[in-house]
Image (cartoon, rainbow, N blue to C red; front, top):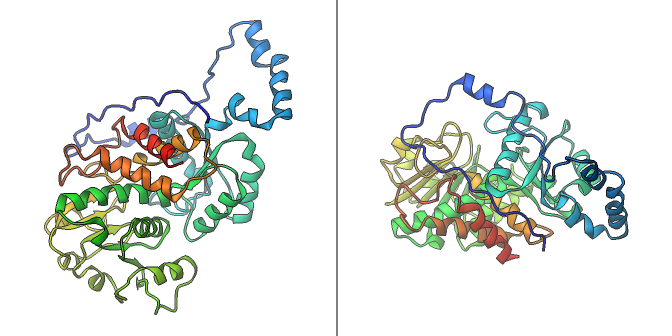
Length: 398
């Protein structure tokens, strides 16, 4: 097992979510000027002796040792604690396909979160290609430089094949955060929301709007923990076996969800539903939400514009969550991915399993049990306990 330095303490959450301080465009651009990252030196070089140890001739001894025993690279380079944050810029935030260069500020931000919340070094790698073969080949060739891959902002359905092939090709943890980070936090939040409204998680009727990367992953993790009545909608309606216009991942999901074979759109799907999870750019009509079950749960996670505004959703739901930081119950991937990767790397895991993701979700949900309420179903993204708790749960699952 590889031992790393202690997880740093995340900044305290002092912001008032109900009345956030306005952020100016000038402030945003000033904070990004010159980038958000730099490379630091762990052991300063202050003398000729230091230079001889860190570089030539001393470094040659370490290189010879690694050549003779490649496993030493895990303990005598930074690869074992370095995450490659990889994107092709095809599905960046809510901006869509904006290209590799435009995606780099987002990937730098992701790396900053890895360092701040999990003490992990990471390097953004944005690739000017959308060819899956080329991306896989590129990462395989540079794989000795890092210990894990965080895929980010890769468009569906290509993201599914890309992740699968990288998992097969690389002997290290690989995770597409837009899929699994979202799914982990949704599971944690839905677990606690069910407690708040006095319903059993496994008995919930859940409707997921969006059959892209996040929607598919949310459906998969809910099925894995025992939910049986899960309906997924794409832009043309519910997924069901009778659809002739779907294939691949959607076809597979249609066969394993929607047990009541509900057809058409959100009106039919939401009738009597206990929970709605929105992970698409679409909107849901107020009249459809009004048809949900008593003590309903609504997670309207599209950013920056939720599928239904929280103020309207609260008229029909007991628990409401969004992906935004200016409303209660923010469903934020930063609750999951730093601790998941930290735990996987600390444990020397060769991959990130479904069991590890479920364990991470349970760890997140448990941190919110003290003080659990309709406006607090998950801990704050800035809660310093989260990443260590998630990492410990992942290690235990390994």
